Image (cartoon, rainbow, N blue to C red; front, side, top):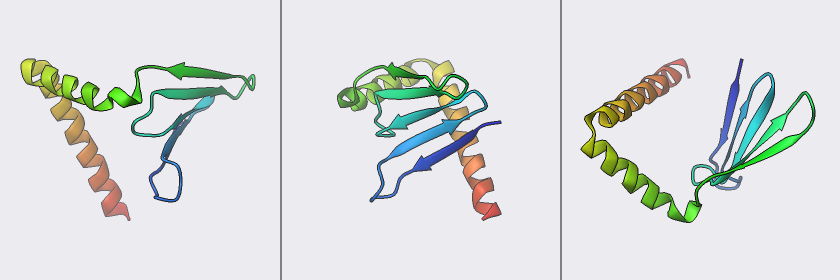
Length: 96
C-alpha cells in the first residue's frame, strides 16, 4: 500500500511525499526538483538521491518533447500516460 501527498498551496513549500510500507520518499521543490530523500522506516536511516539540475528543467522538457516528436513509440507512451492522468483526475472529480 502506498500514499501520495502533494502540497501546491502558495503559502506552503511545493513538495511531494510518497509513503510505502518500507519507507517514504520526500521530494522538495516539486515539480522542479533535482534531489529527493528516501527515509527507511525499518532502520531510521535516510538516503539522498540527486539527479540533474533544476536550472536545466526547461531544457529537459524540450529534449523530451523533441524525442517524442521524432520517435512514435515515445509519443504513444506520452499519449497513454496523459490519458491515464485525465481518467484518474476525472474519477477523483466525480467522487468529490
